[in-house]
Image (tube, rainbow, N blue to C red; front, side, top):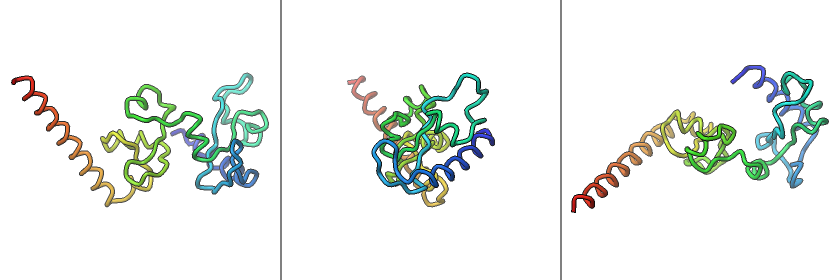
Amino acid sequence: MNPKIVRWHKEARREAFKEMKQCEKCQKPLEESRLFIHHKQYSLKGVRSIYDLSYRESSQRGIVEILCTRCHYLEGHFAETLEEFRSNRMLHSGICGICNQFASKGWQRAETFKVDFPVCKKCSKSQRDKKILVTLRTNQLNLFQHDHEIRKNRKSI
C-alpha cells in the first residue's frame, strides 16, 4: 500500500480516537483497536487526493466518519465469498475463518494462503495457525477431489 495512505490512516486513527469515543452511527463506545475510518467518498473536486487533507478537514467536509465494526460491516465493505472479493476489491474485509473475529483485508490474506475464507492479521502471523491454514487448505483440496470422484462415478453409472 502507498506509504502516504498508511501514514494518513495511522495519524487519522490517533486523531479520531482523541475526538470520538463512540460510533457516529449507533453511538456504541469504541476501543481504539475497533475504530474504523469509513470513507464515504474517495474523490473531491478541487483536491488532488483525499489523503492531502487532514483527518479533521475530511471529517468536517463529511468525507469520512468513525464507525464500530458492526456499522462498518453494514456499510458494505465485507465480502461473503472469495469471488465477491475478486469482483469488487472494495469488499476487502470479512470474518476470520479461524478465530471468527473481524478481518480487515482478510480476503487478501486468503489469496496469499490459498484458502477460501478471510484470515485476520493475528492468525496469519501465528506459526501455529499457518499450519492450520495449510491443513485447512489440504482438507479443502481433499474434499474437492473426493466430491469430484463421486460426481465422476455417478456419471459413469
